[in-house]
Image 1 (cartoon, rainbow, N blue to C red):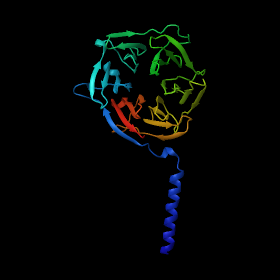
Image 2 (cartoon, rainbow, N blue to C red):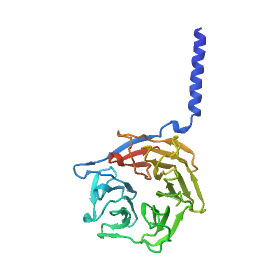
Image 3 (tube, rainbow, N blue to C red):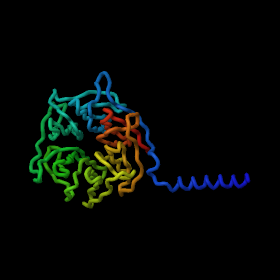
Image 4 (tube, helix red, strand yellow):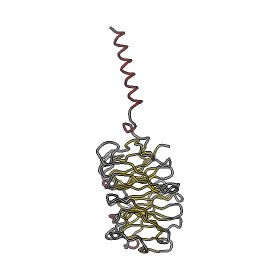
Length: 308
């Protein structure tokens, strides 16, 4: 009898091992460490509904669009507060931010959150940008999220018409990127090192990839309640190894895919504790694979070190 029990024990362990090896990747968490959580202090005050961030790779500075406080806030590479900027009280409700190689910022904001501004702090320039010669569409142009490429071209999602506008550093219209489908809203955009454009359709629950060299378009994803499906995706980021990270506001989670749409894992969970997120609004990944999440519902920025 003891020998039979021993054999059964080994059989059970063998079955567990086989199941572990064959289990789909989404059952296991990412190699991820929380390295900082920024909510404010006595010097800078507290964040109030932050919306987006941008990390300057050359100067190693982090910039946060602190929407409810009508300001931009900067931090050094160790995430110590440096300064804030509010254009003398003229900057209102900034919701998206990028910075070019000329140390100029582009910010979406304004009272209605539908204006595009240029900020050149050394030259003390703060002005609204009017983009001319835009291809006419059914609705007015309403800027939403921003991205910038290595040539300082600006990519602007147009929430009024479900498209992406591309303009140069002087605000001159170059082209538009669109998918001819009335359900496509293209709410966020990112550019990889090869110039490929990644965008996210919240309404569809779908990721679009526009190949820069071939001019082709591919897509993946759908809405649903499963681990690899979206409920309300709001932001997208591309890691240095070209994995696609999608932030889902309602799930309070990050879904990670390969470029071909092959689902890898869920990264976080919904909540209020350290390493958890609630009603998040934006995700960004730098070249060192640090993952920045604007944890809007908790009024903080959480920063994770992704696996190498």
